[in-house]
Length: 218
Ligand SMILES: Nc1nc2c(ncn2[C@@H]2O[C@H](COP(=O)(O)OP(=O)(O)OP(=O)(O)O)[C@@H](O)[C@H]2O)c(=O)[nH]1
Ligand SMILES: [Mg+2]
Image (cartoon, rainbow, N blue to C red; front, side, top):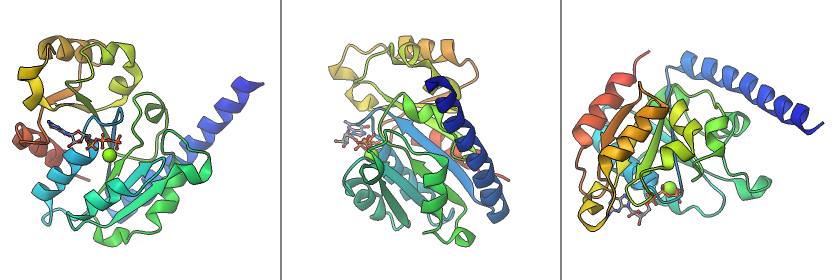
């Protein structure tokens, strides 16, 4: 039965995620899972975020892509240790999962890390279903994607603690209605925190960084 098989996979993932969460807590590592469609600006936002919070906060990144080490190369310019996962090696999964994070974390010195950021594989659907043992989740929606994505892909917005509306520097060239987009996000998750940002100009970063720093507490 296919349904039973899927449930078994998710149960096994949840158990592994629970173990990861315990391990990270023991090591005093706060884990942030960053998700979005391909190209919304996860890597661009993280490069600028790391530039603002390091070295006060000791950071490391695990980044998932199907192929290439492009994002690891970009993230490594910040000086943070980076582990790139290419899911192509095990079937081209469209998301990261708890067992993958457990393995990747073995390549990091967790004792010297305060914040572990996971940049998930670009996808607005599957990553939302897989807990990896993180402590907070953020979704990025860029203004070129259309206002209605939160209601078309609600699970992603429901499981996240914050939504970053990125690329707002492009608003003058688009018909994107930012208030409508915010309304849709709030419709699927009324308690979510929403920030308007531009990873290009760093507009809105003060508030986003303040939110992040407040979250990183044990
Ligand atoms: N104008 C503008 N461009 C941006 C902004 N943020 C990201 N970009 C551009 O958007 C493109 C995609 O950004 P990435 O950071 O690679 O997006 P990503 O979500 O990491 O993509 P994947 O990892 O492939 O899913 C790049 O060309 C960025 O330079 C922004 O705030 N404004
Ligand atoms: Mg990226």
